[in-house]
Length: 421
Image (cartoon, rainbow, N blue to C red; front, top):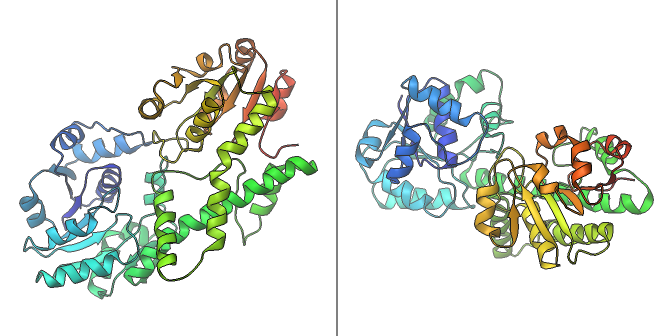
């Protein structure tokens, strides 16, 4: 069975590389010739751990190939994953595939609002196509996308065709045999699960961040609080770490779509609205906290470590650290910033307002305080004795509670965390 993947962006590259790792022959199509040429050389325009190795490994083995010829691609593929990084063209792409006359099983793995699957089926029917359709939301997070694909919590399939479901189970046999649950439901339910999951994560993150603010006023420790809450099997620890405002390239889009769907149905999602408001206030509240710590932001120099929306990615979309940097500069601070992977992307948005550094020590040099904005693990291994000498004032403001506060205080630092006593 030859699998086709329509789209060679971030999502399509992850899907095609991982499916090829299952042993299936995969052809990835994209109309962007320079992008295809770069991928055929094993070059990636984004940072994602282990993805380049998976891409090159499968290309060497002959399991992964690329194409810019839509007719050839569609005629050889019995199943085609539509893998676009946004939902803008998903419906037109699916109908285009269905009209080519080869009638493959179309798998919509792109982020899509509720109702997309139904509209695609109606459009295919109107075009006289008998191509099948499965709605297949994937729950991949930047920085651990391959792990999420290969060890998913569940495989979610939306559609009414039992033969299409059996085909998908065959493709995912390595995961099904491992015991990964397969949930079969309608297109609408599958689409709603994706947006609802994002909304639930947002609510948990906002909840723990509000409690972290309370901890600072009652001499409690938010990290211990989160650990104790997370060990409750009804709650679990994921997305329950104080300081990590939610962000990412799809989070706001999912929440916007879910909110719009609810308003159209005459339903008010009060908790979701409150969670988003808490998240939006993160940068302003954190800037206030930093201003109190350094006694006014005016004419202060701050070193910021981390600009990506989370570690192990170069994406700054929806990044709380980026929002914080903008808030700091608006209030008169000079910022020196460093990120292990996201400096190029951040420069496109912050050029002229921030000085970008090649390492953490240059960001710290001459700064009034050092701010941890993204929880990159490598920041834990910095030479903090050296950093103490570089800073004007030995102060670290850890917006992610990443570092060991006790060790830093023993070295003479003033450590300011999130919800820490």
